[in-house]
Length: 177
Image 1 (cartoon, rainbow, N blue to C red):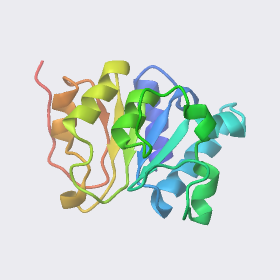
Image 2 (tube, one colour; image 1 turned 90 degrees about the vertical axis):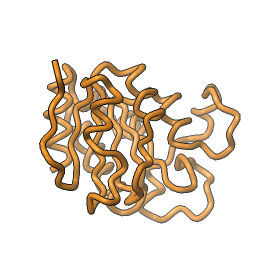
Image 3 (cartoon, rainbow, N blue to C red; image 1 turned 30 degrees about the horizontal axis):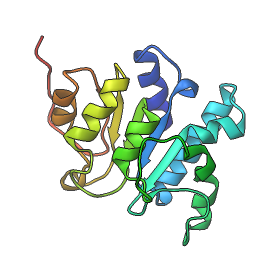
């Protein structure tokens, strides 16, 4: 379902899924499973496996998953980014936070499967919107009390430009204008 939603949202944003840079917050089995499905779809759209994987960034409580990280789970190992590819990033942080990743990757899509409320902050969403006219933001955690950000906040922080899909029920909301 997530891949289908992303295909439709990418089209609505004037692109296709294989052109998108995607950041995940949550690198457990759900996040990694969704990431693998997205990688498979972008390969069907013509990307090599290496290029498809290079466009997906997984962030967990220990920061961006990178090669050489201790304690990676078997299903996470194929989703790491190579540290050598991050040398030109604008950060001095050893642990690369979600904000560091958003600032440097300039993603088109942000997916939350962390189960932690409020982690898609206004600063993170506004940073994403600086570099992406129609950001696709999917706070998929549930129940509603654990969602990374509410659709109303995401829409407000992007001046109504975000495409938002959630994994929890929310009342319908509108955008003035």
